[in-house]
Length: 358
Image 1 (cartoon, rainbow, N blue to C red):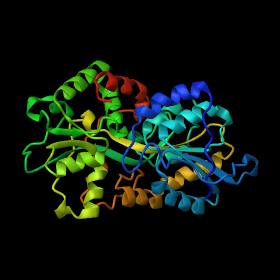
Image 2: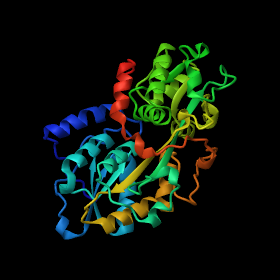
Image 3: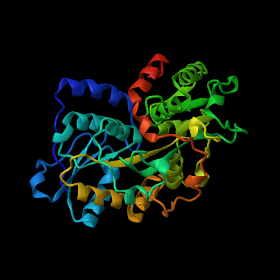
C-alpha cells in the first residue's frame, strides 16, 4: 500500500474554507482530526492504469492503516492513501472538484461527508451496500454510509453522584456548578453541539451554551483527561464518547476504573450517536473498485476490527460488538437526526466563540 505526498492547498478560496472547518473540527484523542500530519511515498496515482484506488482518510494512520492493508488484499486493488484531518480533506476535495485523484473519502465523522454531499461531490452508493446499515447511520440521499459508531455519554463518579442527569439540559442547574468536565475544542463535543442546533434550533442551543458556561464547567483539551478528571474525583460528571471508558477498562481492568457511564435518555441531544463513514467521489475512475472497498468496510472482518481496536460500535447488520458490557446500539435512545446535517460546523464554531468556549 503506497501513500502519496501531500499537495498543498494554494487557492485563496480553499484556504478561506479550510481555516474555519479545521478549527471547528477540533480533534478526537485517538483519532485526531489532524490525522498523521503528513503522507509518505512519492508516486501519484495513474488513473489510466485502472489498478490503483486512492483513498483520502480523515482517520488516523496508526488506527486505520492496518485495516486498509487488509482492504488491499481483500479487494485485489493497490491502495494509495492521503492522510489528514476530515475537515481539511473535505475542503481539499471541494477545491479539487472533478479533477481530484481521490476515489474514496473515509471520514472521521458524518459532518465532513455531509459537506461533500451538499455540494454534489459524492456518487450514489449501490442500494445493496446501503441496506447493510440502518437508515439512522447513512445519508438519506444514499451518498455515504457509516462504518462505525460512537455514542455520547455522561461519565460520572459513583462515589459522589447518586442520580445522574438524564439530559444535558440538567447540567445547567446550580447543583452541578463547577462539577462537570468537558472538552469544548474537541470534535466530538462540537458535533454534539451541532446536533443540538439541528434538533432544537440555534436559539435554544445558544441559550444552553450560555447557561452551561455560566455554570463554571471544568475545561479540558481532550476526552481522555475529561474521563481522568472524573475517575480521579476532580469532577463529578464528564461529557465524552463511550469508547474512552471502554478503552480505559481494557487497558487497566474494570476494577481499576472508578468512573461509570450513563447514557442520556428520551432522545436527548446528549445521546447523539455519530459515525465515521465513507463515500465514493463522483466521477471516480475507479468507482467499481471504490464500491468494492465500501463493501469491505462493512464486512464482518472490518466491522469486528473497529469493535476490537477502537471499541466503537459496528453498524453493519448482523455484526455484534465483542466489547464486554457494551449496551447494544439499538438500545440507545439516540435522537432522530439526519447525520448529514452535522456539516454546519462553521456555524457551531461561531456560536462557541460567542459563548467564550473556544
